[in-house]
Image (cartoon, rainbow, N blue to C red; front, side):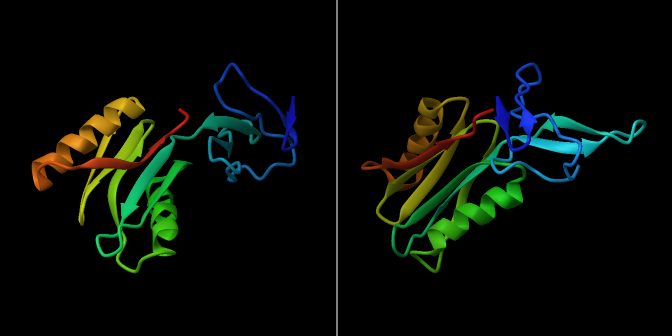
Length: 148
C-alpha cells in the first residue's frame, strides 16, 4: 500500500516508512509516526510518536473542543483550545491524555475531565469527578481516544 510516498510498515506499528526524499524531522499528517535521522548511518528511519489528546471547556457558554493523535501535549492542547475558542472566549483545558482516552462530563457550568484505557473508563472517571464537584446531574458531553 502506498501512502504519502512510502510503504506501510505493519511490523513497527507505524503507518509509514520514511522515503529517501523525506525531511527526517517531519511528522505525518496524523502525527502517528516521525522520521528521524539515524546517528550512525545518516539515513532516515521511522519511529512511532506518542498520541496526545486534550479536551477544553468554556464555563461561560458550555462550548467544548477536543483533539487526539497529536505528537505532543502542547499541540493537542492548542488544537482543543482552538476548536473550543471558535465558540467561546474563556476555554480552558480540562484534561490531557497520552496513548489513552479522555472524556468530559458537565453539569451546568461545572466540568470535569477523566482519562482511562478505554472510552468507558474515561467516561466513568469524568462522571465521578463531576459528581464529586457538582453533585448529581452530570452527563458526558465529549470524549476522544488516541489510536495508539
